[in-house]
Image 1 (cartoon, one colour):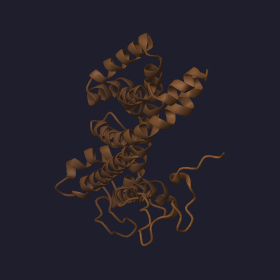
Image 2: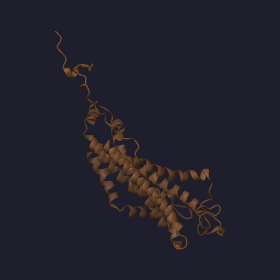
Image 3: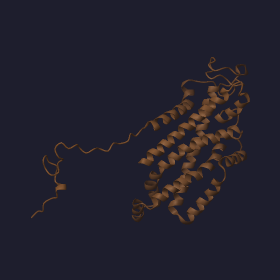
Image 4: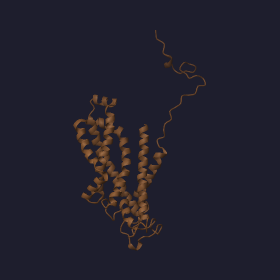
Amino acid sequence: MVGRLPEALLPAVPGGPGAPAAGAAPPARRRRRPALTPGIVIPAAMLALIVGACFLWPLVYPVPPPVGGSILDASMPPFSPGHILGTDPVGNDILSRILYGGRVSIEVALAVSLIGLLVGGVLGTVAAYRGGMVDTVIMRVLDVLIAFPALVLAVAIAEGLGPSEMHVIWALSFFSIPAFARIARAGTLRLHGQTFMLAARLSGTRTWRILRRHVTPNIMPQLVTFALLGAGVVIILEGALSFLGLGIPAPAPSWGNMIALGQGTLSAQPALVLIPSLFLLATVLSLNLLGDALRKRWSVR
């Protein structure tokens, strides 16, 4: 004789035990949070506008070269013919130098963040997953690097290597690698005792496959968020090195050395300092706001 099914398993036919009572409100659906919020869209749009202007404007609307201006065009005011933002004391177009200088700052920030994410992420992940002596050796070496003040270490390396864009990238990478390694190590340690990680190890899955399929996707949001926040710091440090004459060598433009060169004529032409400062501020602010918004978004998930 077949037993009777529990009422909870009966199909929800009209009037049956599984059907909702007459006049009852349907169950509320969980509302999904929108994928894009103003906190993400606004700083992302601002950042895209700045990056697009620096890299695409000279291709769409040609501007004069950033160096080699004529002394006859020196210190022209804004909105002069052929010079929207005017010229500096040696006749170089300010808008052109802003755009090409922005390229340098963005390229340095991107390169340093990628090096830190790749090298530091791998070191931190391996240290946490292997543990023991491997973890101790890797993290103690990185602790030695992170113990030095970032700007002092960058100045020492840049002074030893000489001023150039590539040397600035290597100098600032020493500052970023230990920070990324700590983020990756902390994220990997949180995953190490999870059930799916234990099941993957017991099933005989190779270590590199566990790291690629299980660890990397789970710690990548934290690393990307930190990369956005760190890129703003890198832009400021690059500007500081260029301001000190240890970054991008003049007359090649960067926002940092433009501010340094403009301080001599600050009273006569404040735009030489204010305009690159505003571009630097807007870029760093958009990176910080975007990184903070993504951190909140991913932490809720």
